[in-house]
Length: 122
Image (cartoon, rainbow, N blue to C red; front, side, top):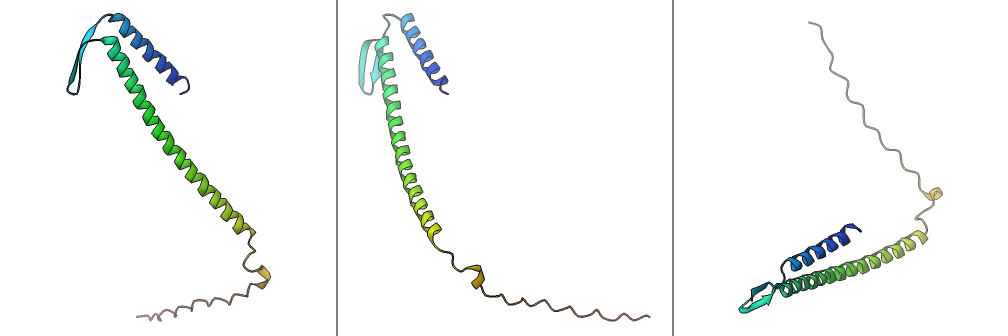
């Protein structure tokens, strides 16, 4: 991924430059909302579109980065709270030493089932 992204950016730049070189002096009409711009250079339109795309992508990346940083901060606090709780619980003595545990009464066994009925010969 480290090499793919820069390669894609370079490829996109080469394609944009190639497009602008093959269309020198082209003029187009552009309509934005209710406003119409006539006889606008194609290179200016392509540059403006690229600039708007980069700005929009940067805004999305900024918002996503802020969200990730806030989540990381929340998780770091949670880890610190859990480590403090873990340390506290490890420092507590055990409930009762084994020697002081009372003897458990024997568990009663299940009664034997009754003997089967006698079998008589016919």
